Image 1 (cartoon, protein in one colour):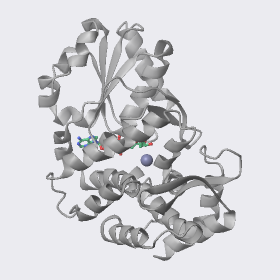
Image 2 (cartoon, rainbow, N blue to C red):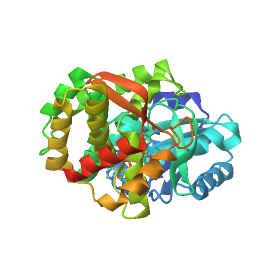
Image 3 (tube, rainbow, N blue to C red):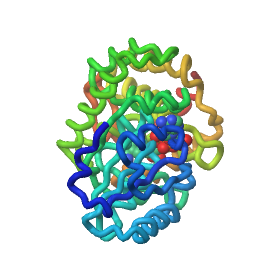
Image 4 (cartoon, protein in one colour):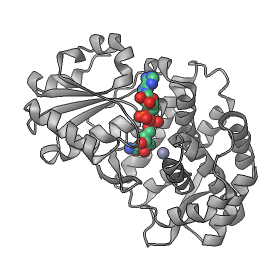
Length: 333
Ligand SMILES: NC(=O)c1ccc[n+]([C@@H]2O[C@H](COP(=O)([O-])OP(=O)(O)OC[C@H]3O[C@@H](n4cnc5c(N)ncnc54)[C@H](O)[C@@H]3O)[C@@H](O)[C@H]2O)c1
Ligand SMILES: [Zn+2]
C-alpha cells in the first residue's frame, strides 16, 4: 500500500505512532517506507488510554520538532487510533493525522468518523474531540495475526451496523464465524464503511441522526464500564450484549419483529457466550446508564431503538424500570 498522501508533508514533519504488537508486521512498515520516520511504539490497554499516555505522545512530537504542518500516522487498533487522534487534534491546536487500522473493529468503526478520545475518571472516552483523520488506508491483511476474540469483537460492531441496513444484516447472518473466511470479508468491511460514512456525513457532530450508530451502546457501555472495573471485556462483546437488551426494548416499546432479537441471541450464545455480570449488578448498571454522556439530561436514559432492521429511531427515553427489565431479560438467556 503506497501512501500518496504523505507527499503533501515535509519528510522531517512526519512521525509514526504504532501498537507494539505490530513489531510482528515489519514487512508492512518496510513496504510503506514508514521506517524512514521516527516511530513511537505503544503497549496498548484501556487503562493506558489516558492523559498520561497522550502527554508522552505530545512529548514525542515536540522532541521531533513537529510543527502545525506536521503529520502523525497512527497504526493500530481502536485504542491507539483514539489516543493518537486525540494527541494530534490537541497538539499545537491540531495537526493532521492518518489512521492505519489493524483490527477489524478499528477498520469498520474506530478509525473513521472523527471521534477521538481517552478514558478519564474511570469513564470510557469521557474526554475527547471530533477531528477526522486525513486518510484511512484499509488493508485487511493486517487481520492475519489478530486473535479470534478480537475478530469477534470487531464483528460485534459489524452486527450493529447490519441492524441499520437490511441487506448487510442478511449478509452477516450468512457469514461463517466458525471459520472466519477472508472470502466475503472485504465486501462486508466496505459495506460497513459506506453505511457509517453516509451517516456521519449527514451529522458529523452527532447532534441528531448520527445517534443511530449508538445502537447497542447505551447498555453496551454500562456493561463495558462495569467490566472495566472488574475483568475487562472487549468493546464489541459489550456491544453485542447491549444490542440484545436494546432489541428486547425495541420489541416491547416499538413493536419491532422478534426475529432479529432471536437471530442475534443465537449468535451470542453460539459465538460470544453469556455476559459475565451477575444479576445483582443490575442497579449499578442502571446507575452507570444514567451517567452516560449520550444523555441530554442528567439522570435520564436515552437510547436508539429499532422499529425494524434498517429502521432505527433515536432519542428513545427509557425508564429505570424498563432498563431493569431489559438487563434481567439479557441475564436470563
Ligand atoms: N472513535 C470511535 O469512533 C470508536 C468506535 C469504536 C470503538 N472505539 C474504541 O476502540 C477501542 C477498541 O478498539 P480495538 O478493539 O481495536 O482494541 P485495541 O486497540 O485494544 O486492539 C485489540 C488488541 O489487538 C492488538 N492488535 C492490534 N492489531 C493487531 C494485529 N493486526 N494483530 C494482532 N494483534 C493486534 C492490540 O495490541 C490489542 O491487544 C476502545 O477503546 C473503544 O472505545 C472508538
Ligand atoms: Zn462501538
